[in-house]
Length: 341
Image (cartoon, rainbow, N blue to C red; front, side, top):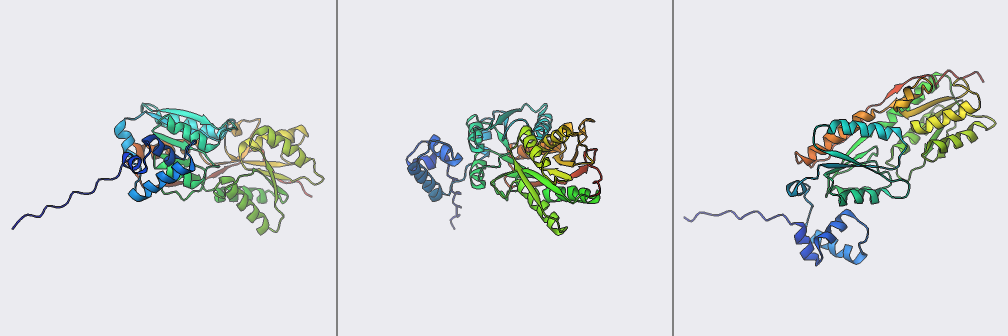
């Protein structure tokens, strides 16, 4: 009886196979996968059709085989937010002694998140930490097929990349319980507008509205831009109203500090208008600021993001991990009992 020989398993298609099938270069295939700029619709259609025909999926592990760059990219939407600094400190502390370096890539107000992420990939970073509220999940899924990715803050149901999010609903519940217990009923929410339902600001806004309505109160939402000076200008107008709020819940501490400055300009204190922020940045603890704030542990977020990236880079993990932070309220002098009406 002749011995049966099992057929060899079919080789997994490579990026070279896709390039050959589509009749383009490997660089062109890489650009299509990353959704990079400069790709014509016709070329994108040819490459995506070849990917579908071959059932090609980029190998993250192959980058390690070709040699690591020992760099981690960190994309931030803009500079000036101290919470991002906390995350950066956590990430760099975790990388200490590892041989890896962190590359900070801010949007600076004129580059979109996708352009910054593309630039990091072009520099062959081994992994990316991103705070990218304006980038579509499908685009990030394609990017994560090429380089390990951890997305911070946004509540994506990702399949190819990891996420670290705060339990934003629980955090806002802590804020509202605190302000209601102090007797506040005219509570305004100062936040930034965001185009995505997955952003933390969207979750916080929805929870604030729900809590106000449950208490039989009218929500008062005020939108501003992300910088502290913008929050200051917006807060000045808010406080100048005929019946200003007795408390302001700011969507992050940068906005909250702008509100505190506007309150100080009027010679008011927390007894006139209480302020609660979100993030618990280092400045919140300063005795001259003493900001009540929700702590979502920025240092821990930075350290955890590195742990997740290294699991993918070194260990080859491919299953998505979605890590959720349980927030805590730090009560300080910026919130006080409401004055009787």
